[in-house]
Amino acid sequence: MAWNEPGNGGKDRDPWSNSGKNQAPPDLDKLLRSLMQKVSSVLGGGRRPGGEFSLLGLAVVLAVVVVVWAVSGFYTIKEAERGVVTRFGKFHEIVEPGLRWKATFIDDVRPVDVESVQSLSASGFMLTQDENVVRVEMDVQYRVADPREYLYSVTNPVDSLSQATDSALRYVVGHTNMDDVLTKGREKVRQDTWQVLEQITDPYKMGLVVVDVNFLPARPPEEVKDAFDDAISAQEDEERFIREAEAYAREVEPKARGQVKRLEEEALGYKEQAVLKANGEVARFNQLLPQYLAAPELTRKRLYLETMEEIYQKANKVLVDLPEGSNSLVYLPLDKLGATGGTDKPASGSTAARLSTPSSNYSGDKSTSDTADGVNSSPLRSSDRFSSGRY
Image 1: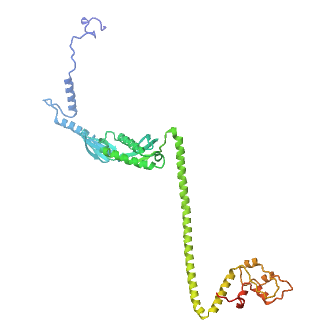
Image 2: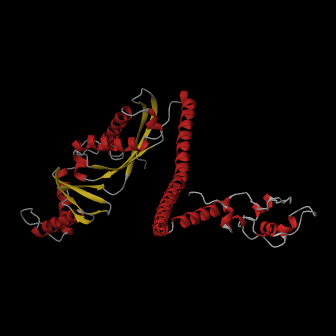
Image 3: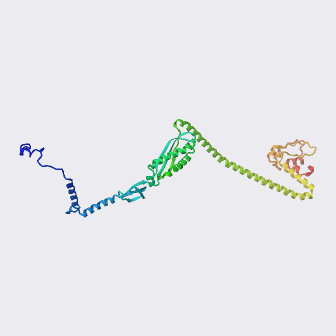
């Protein structure tokens, strides 16, 4: 029979028609009660006549909650970090690295890296003291020194440090000439910027410490770069010439000092020699004085002969003693005699071979032999050839 065929007036088989019974929505209280009964049966308890669960089941539930809460409180702080603990939003303490525990929902922990060195840069076109525009770049390296101040003293400490760096750099560049910024004063600009930066940041207690400040190469604007390059090249040449001059001075000065020292030593030696010679002359004359007093005439003649001997040894002249009325012509090569050093005894045969005399007048007398054998000494052998005279 088809579902739409008549039967009981066609109502029993019509799916769109009401079966005659009123259907109410499900009761939420019954559902909750049924769920609680199932949980209670799992925990091993049963419903008591008053509808209350057993205390054992409640204790087990509380124990599970406590264990989960306790386990969730364990955390780890890394070696390079420090943990900032706040309790109910207020700072409580700073914890060291390692395994730690906190009360969940009561304490909050924020790890902060205090060993890693970070960097930020500041750059821009800046006006120097001599009213020139240069582009300056600086790199600042920093790290966290105090985690509490880093988190709670300033809203954004890194941004505050960046602004302080820019302010310090502009202040120092504004009080420095362009040549110092570009070339020889770069180290001073770096140190001054570091000092001013610390003076600016100290009152804010940002918890940051500046590790190093690197002053990157500054450069002029591109429009005048070529002119600045020429100026820098000239300054480098100036420095090079100065270094070369200093090197030359270091090379010449020791030599000059050595010459000065040598001249001083020679002067002192000459002084000592002159003093000793004078003392010797005084001593010699002191010894001659008694002899002179004893025989004045003989002493004068002796002194005269000794003096003439000393003079003739240094003279380039030769005296020849010939007898009166002799027509002999004696040829003496004075240049050759001078080359022999003016000795009293020339080599045998050498001087005699150079003597040329006329054959008619040569008789080999004593005067000629005296001249050939002892040219310089012959005037000094006999005292009767010199007038005594007064000395």
